[in-house]
Image (cartoon, rainbow, N blue to C red; front, side):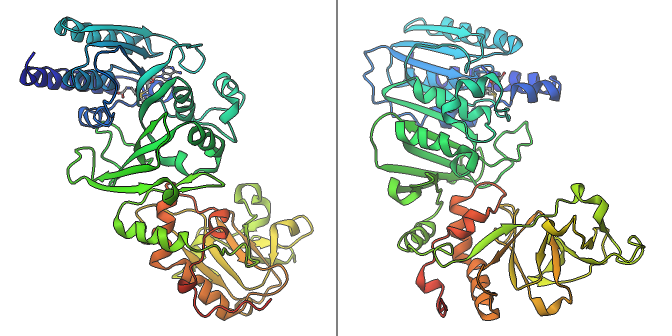
Length: 480
Ligand SMILES: C[S@@+](CC[C@H](N)C(=O)[O-])C[C@H]1O[C@@H](n2cnc3c(N)ncnc32)[C@H](O)[C@@H]1O
């Protein structure tokens, strides 16, 4: 078959699958899609992902390929076409798909492919079983997947079976990646499209360790705009494509494109040491040469706020649990003579300054009683760090200041979406707070933070473990 004809067939079949899977999805109840974690890949993403394999394996030997969570087969078929165009002649494909309706389409699409390509030795097996629970003893050269995404409970059978990577609440996609990593031949390769959360989330720590102990990360692709990758779905998670190989490798390619049309692809080469922070095995994703300079600057620094003796804690007032003790208005709701103190929210900090009380529907006061004492903190000098922010915000780290002398109270309540920084043995000083605050909100810290944090959380440990390059923290003299 000439390359032209091959290309025509390829485009025809991929577009056909895209169309039918999207219309299948449109007609499927949301609850069903959610329970199956079913979001289909478009043809341009499938084409891009299938092109990431190295195609270094001998073309004369049998190549074993797996697509787990195959849906209508768009990824497997994109890869099959790439393989034929590279000259592979003996291909054995295995596909896992649990949804019986999708399996019908999958079977039709593969049958059609087989009919049209009778000059190669091609066989396929569709396994309509749970990929995680099935005892698959085969090994594969290439694995391609857009796995299902949804949270599991630790007591679910899938989580129990993969206990060795579960730490906190697991997501099924990481179990698909784990199982795939265990099914790869030496020198095998796997390409996945998943949420970015596994690169830094605490719940993925054990998983990352397992993955990075057994495979090398070879490629990461990120999308600059969040909404465009799955044309038919509104996916709010940041999505990435990763390639892992079962062979030692020090170098990683990082590419980025605006969206799933893959125009304007930017490409960087980095080393493992530059982006994988040992200890927590967190994976950073720089997307420009400037980001690499930031990594070098922070990488050269050993000192952290934790080393300098600072502490950070989370506001203890979870409002729905404390309803009986909180009120909008100081006087009216607490008609008794019980004492009340400020309850501070994110909204109380405007351009870092504390504004209290707010003219707001949010409760501004909490009672100061024996029952609430454990929820309150002493009124002292604190730096407040908001616990959530999004990629679209100007800065990921947003702060505020509480100065003791601005509030005539002995105690304060801090709502649970806030963290506060303090020292145990002494008050924070105003100058020190300003220095600390301007460091945390600087452009360089923002860049560094974004490289390592792909979710919306700003964790206490992320702040305490930030390396502090001396040149960005000039003027600080530790008094201890
Ligand atoms: C995110 S969709 C991707 C579908 C297809 N690969 C694509 O890219 O368009 C994941 C697929 O995995 C299937 N699935 C969900 N849980 C599964 C399981 N435990 N074992 C096998 N397949 C599963 C779903 O039915 C769904 O079709």
